[in-house]
Length: 427
Ligand SMILES: Cc1cc2nc3c(=O)[nH]c(=O)nc-3n(C[C@H](O)[C@H](O)[C@H](O)COP(=O)(O)OP(=O)(O)OC[C@H]3O[C@@H](n4cnc5c(N)ncnc54)[C@H](O)[C@@H]3O)c2cc1C
Image (cartoon, rainbow, N blue to C red; front, side, top):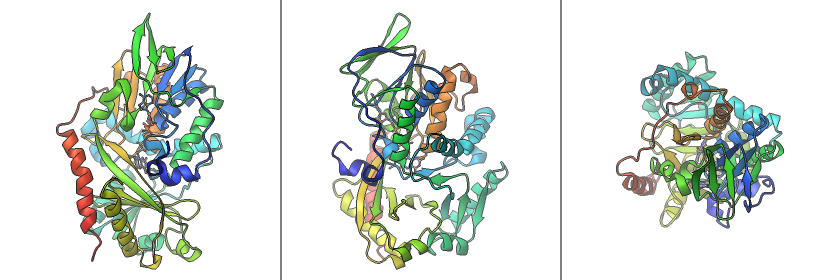
């Protein structure tokens, strides 16, 4: 995107075109102005417009420019925090409410895809959280038991069944989560945007919000060439936040994450590697993820930034790792490479912020924003429509707070991933 082949890689290559949009160049009125053209912003705009609100969505660059166009495409149910721990972290009311909402969030994604006929390579065969060694196995058994007692359709597969589904005997087992799946993330964002425009949203790209001010009980939101006067502002800028909501970005520690897509695998390899097309990640601290796209390209990712020395180190590691995981794969050729920044919070949970009266937003999905962003976008719409009070939201209201040593931690993540990948999978 914006002439950078390492920003959105394969997803930009294979996504259907976005709806036609233009920058905001006038002064307009709306009920709600939504800032940010990712899942959170587009979902909130779509649901508000469907309920009859007049909505203007302003995106700084292009639809899906942030995490929405760069991610792995795993439609996860839940967060990293163990289900039983959530009520302890958030309190029993918010904890159980969040678990319930996130557990059901993939279903909303799938329903929206069906309802709006979004072409985004949706696969509904579940995800496999693969256990590395006995510690990894304990972790997934624990997670499965905690979800299981809440009625979630999760199963622990043994090593043999995991090997059959993955095409590799590297794992001690896997947690199969049938609520989850995979999609083409940029195609999903663009499809949602098309649905929003059809529902009546005025969507402007290349329109970064640079300032806001209160005038006569309304908000005036400024871009370089226009203004929107509205009752409400939704801030849906997350890790790519610029302009007036710098706090959204500075309360997060950014974790770089890259993906490499092979050329389409041949028929025999496709029969042995992920024949069921589940989305996969493992229990390692520096985790790896992989999944197939519709054309049979294997998309392989891990922590790290594809810049400076990182590009060669991570690509070399990925080639070695793939050959080790899948000895049958032979020579590996990558067709696309890209990376982005994942916004991590100090307790690995998202945030609800009220920046001022009638200025609200969710952010901080810790690398799990497809389903949560979609459902939280709908929740923001319901809140503004008066259907959900602040007390009924899935997260408590918090103020953005910058974590200590943020910049240092970000440098450490990027450098640490290089050191680890330089050494890993050599023997
Ligand atoms: C490499 C990577 C892998 C990931 N893998 C997964 C995964 O497999 N599964 C999963 O569920 N999640 C994953 N995630 C996380 C997921 O992509 C994000 O959580 C999700 O995109 C957040 O959606 P959002 O709409 O809140 O924000 P974004 O999608 O980041 O959208 C925010 C938008 O706001 C715009 N913006 C910022 N400032 C302004 C401004 N001042 N004016 C106007 N617009 C502005 C940005 O340009 C951007 O387009 C991954 C993320 C990355 C980077």
